[in-house]
Image (tube, rainbow, N blue to C red; front, top):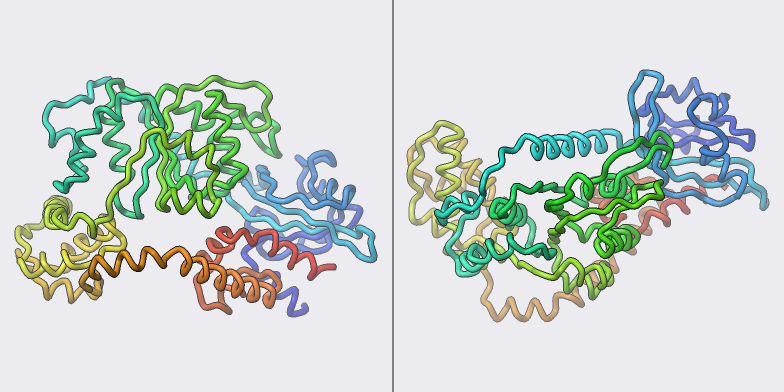
Length: 473
């Protein structure tokens, strides 16, 4: 086996090659992940290996016939072991001297992601069906917001607006850095609703666009290989709230489809022709400021104005310092009960130490830090020295406000230059690695998931596919 084949065999992505008769000429080890034996299928016809396929449905057949690539095609099928699999495939022609001599396909197995999201959808649906019809409007201020902790002016103002926000049918766009509590706000808006309405949550960054489209809008049988009739999240959330977290991760194509559904209040399932009327209130959230998304043209303006009828901006924890002691005590009480411990105090110098930290991970980081302390502290009081022993924080005082202002003025240009250079470095490393993500990550000495996220951010997927295509020409 050549070193090139050995390299391809170690890829996480499955690769199959066929000749013009659809006979499989190569398959790497990753093909085994979808229930096949990469060695035993060599020499067999694709339609024999996948008996539920025919020439009309086969991407191999269409690519060889047309000479045109088919990128990001979703397919579902059942393996010989009875396992249901879902893949995203991209199929490319192999061209020599101007003639198509075969095709190769790169695929990723998203079965685990699909199964997880289906389970989450099922649990959310069951929760809607089983939920007791109670009036969520409580008179006690603290009971209304059991997880909405804080006395900062911005938080108190938001709490006072919850009833007004909950009673309106208008869309809401929430901006806040990671860990500021966007989902907690949504839960409280839902809790304050006058009616017992469903709340369905979907993180838009958790699954690829092709799969997300199916989850949002549903599918009809035959929409793609293995597709069945399924309701989408819009239909499941009908009459209630659909919370779309990290909506900034949607592609422009999916943004356009989402805009159409919001405008028409009708959804058309993937592969279907009929439209179903839906009455869904959209609450969306982003951890990137909308101003930045619009200036970088990462988000459609028309969709932004549809989603941002009402808006909420959650302050980072470093901007609400007086809430830090309150949150610390809240999390101490929470973990005392959970861990059956009795840590009833935190020293003043420990409080001061934590208050001066910048908390880039915001409330989520604070909660994780308190959980760690509650596991390691043996006395009844958390001391400053305990925080140091966790080796978890590097505490630095916040810069002066004037420095923050100067940084904000320089931030955009500096960020653009950094991203431009980073993209160039990644492209060069990908070129040297022949489009191999795993090897590129090793060459750059960064986690493969981090590299995959940056490839998506800089829209380098097509560049990678072209590199791999050149390798086989």
